[in-house]
Length: 212
Image 1 (cartoon, rainbow, N blue to C red):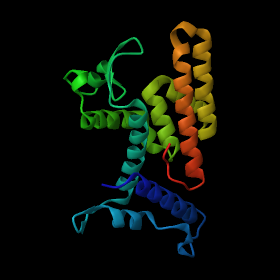
Image 2: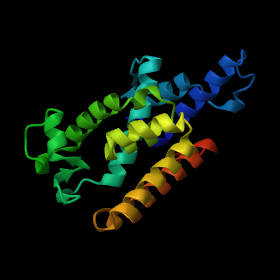
Image 3: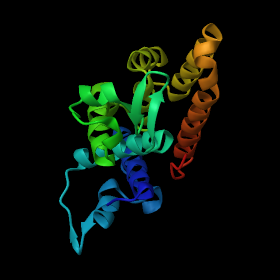
């Protein structure tokens, strides 16, 4: 299975090559790093054989896996009896959300594989797949928190990641201000999540690994 760092290297290489192609020229040296295909070829292996892949599919899955990793790491795997004072959840997925996406069991029995399957459906519904990385992860994480808010913020931000995060931060501040008894206790956690996203975006911009 591809490591997190190798996925990021592949995404970075792909972005660099795409920009070069759009400018009408390809890199003259290997200083820009390995191509997306080469990175995946070196790492997508089962035993001693390389797994066949489609470039676009591989890139799309790499983006999803990064978004999923970020969300799962922040949500954790603990079963929460009353998530936000509403209902039980696990891996950040409410019981009602799990049922909506085909899970028929008790949320406490949700496995990581189940959670990934549900999050993939949410990812597709959110439109994150059509967005460039790292905006795809920023939007996906926001959509998991509030689909309607994520759609509005994406539209207002016009695809600018920094503006997107500022709008999300402003929304949380307003919620805590308007209804402090209901949302005040969540403000610190919300802001920490935005901080993690900003760290991830900054690391990507400077070519580092995306370990938030």
